[in-house]
Length: 266
Image (cartoon, rainbow, N blue to C red; front, side, top):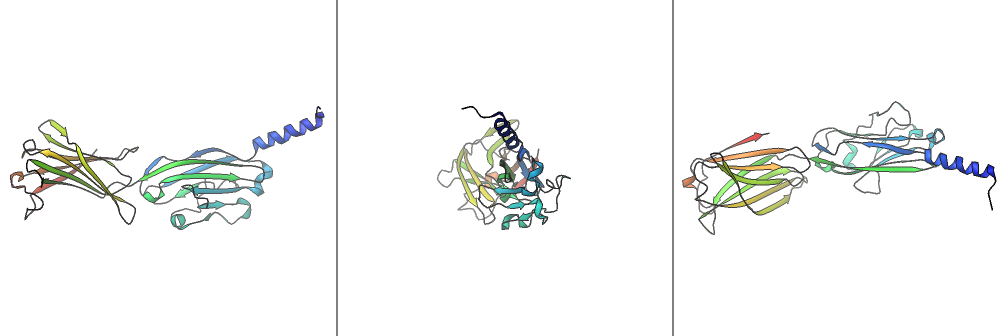
């Protein structure tokens, strides 16, 4: 049975309104920032005039069912922060738009650290419809210290055990140890990697390599290169052994060898 033309028109109007109802048009934000840099994530959306009094904007973090941020424009109370992590870092006065019903749609996070890495989800809803989008963001922390330690192997004195300790970093970096003589550079094979998590969530990572002492002579420069995936971060630490012939096993040495260490930023 065919529907009357008036009912068909009504259904078309309802369908069109549903399509035009509140929906997110863009979610804008960085994919990577360094710890301490301002983090801005903007959730732009469109809505119908009749939805103004119904709009509800929420932000979620790392899949939690509880939002970390909520703003109901019609309540005229301003946005609210939910949870301890964000309460001291969110700028609740920030306005992303001059539209009364859009001005607090964005998150402005001041001085974020590695703990703010994760998935951010924006959800905008009304009585008519709802929409959500999400974005993964990495807040990386460059290492606080890098140290190269060479020791004669305790199991075979023909070998030199070289470790590179990278402390206070996030996430786990890529660490490569090498030695350079004149213009020749040799990358050493990784023998072991140890990752420890500190109470603040930052990581201490130690990579160890083994090399023949006959290859690593007094004019060799040891190098440790540290990179963080999906970022432009790169640092190289170098160490020269001025008294390498006096180098002993870590378990028998009564004093540390004379070392010179310096850092090169690229």
